[in-house]
Length: 428
Image 1: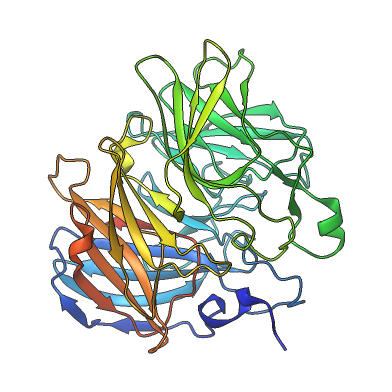
Image 2: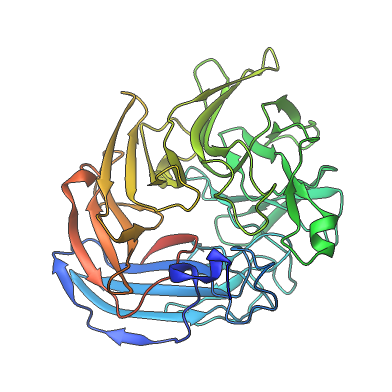
């Protein structure tokens, strides 16, 4: 009997790749949403050992919904199978191209607008290099910044990689990193890249037992490093923080005093007793750190007791102070229910909630700016929703200025989209 929850229900893989034209829509799709909504996540069709299977494992699968001028033209899903890579975590667009990406030394995979995997070698010309699941695009420069690890080949270093605005490799800076922390994420400010050396580290014991090879490490002091973006001669400046781990930051920026402020969905403990996934040991809470460059100290504050993950903001506010943030929220239970979207107003210390409703389970809310919009929250939230009764998924479109008012439009999909990871909107 399969007791691994990450192989059951809507965590389970879908077996069929389909293409469905002319999707049914309830409501009205905003006409300025003309493009492609893509979502990437693991789809483990072949599992060697159900007991040791981890949610993060499995070949990537893309799910795409093409919108144009108020119409839902098609849905299709395809496995990611190019460039000798699993690429199962996220999908981004940069310099006119689309990439499925993952961390830990696996290569990016270029994707065309029909979701086909290509055999190109992204960013590096005629050679391959590993990348990350979470690069950060600087909206001022158009450059893509990434912190990359590959402990199988570079056991005690990581690479800070910059991809220029034209999509070509600009630089790689190697940094000592003996902790071998799971470097899933980074953040950037105008002058710094944040190096997140947190309390989940590489585990030879788990690797040898066939499990996902990262574990909570009480012996490792969590710390956040500031790496100067403009001067490679400067060492990383480290700030110790309480032991924690986070997969995803909301944002980072430099305040008027020159301090660096970063907020994230932070866990007190994970991958300790539960070796299959992240949710059962402590809920992730919205937490903020202020790094004082003069004193060298860090101050933290928990901003919300609710369990939140998969945060997003208006991408033009990366590196600068943002008023609004959006996240997927769950009840504080051992099995998350992905029941609602929270819109945070950090200036007024308030929040607004959209509830998916009974039997519905949501996914990461992706913010898409409205054409011609000038306000930070002037745009849309796109989120996939799984319905337990129908065993199918929908794509909902919310007004980001008032998400609690409910969907402006619901695009009905012909099959379910498993609980996975990250999506992006590609304007076409």
